[in-house]
Image (cartoon, rainbow, N blue to C red; front, side, top):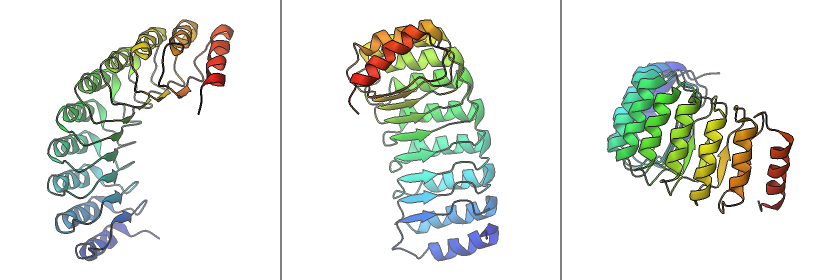
Length: 272
């Protein structure tokens, strides 16, 4: 049974005065934009909750914009899950604006929201100004290489983000190379997911160079790309010089037997 928009509005009225509540999970309740806007309104009045899960509620761009406006005023919420809500580029841009003003949020999940290039570029721009967000999930938003490069530029300046998920975002080699270059300058990111982004062998070579210089990244997912033997060999060689990485996923990359063997040796001797 779903709450629906009307149930969402009723809950929002109660939520305004429920000052002992610190975490609210409303996953898959078909709240719609009206229910989302009502809950956003409640966030102006109730400043106790620190965690809000609104995954899969069809909030749309209007619901996303209402929540973004609330984030500009709310200074308590630290974790917000908006996965799978059809926020679109407009919702993404509104949330980017909010991140420029909000100084409390540390975790934001925007997975599967059709944010696209315009919304993605806006969010990349927000990373220059925001100094509190540590985890950002942008998986499956069709960002493309242009956004990959914009995020890479932001990572050269941002010193707060520790976890970034860009899985299945069509970044392609240009976006991948830019992110690899950013790892040479960034000293805070510990987890990066680039799975299924059409990354070719040249990305593996640039990433290998980055791994020789970066000393903070501990987890890297490069699975389901097209790194091939050349890219795989470069990464395998770089692992001998890297002292921080403890988790690496490089499956489904058409590696040769030599590269697979070298990687197996690294996996065998790397503590987990």
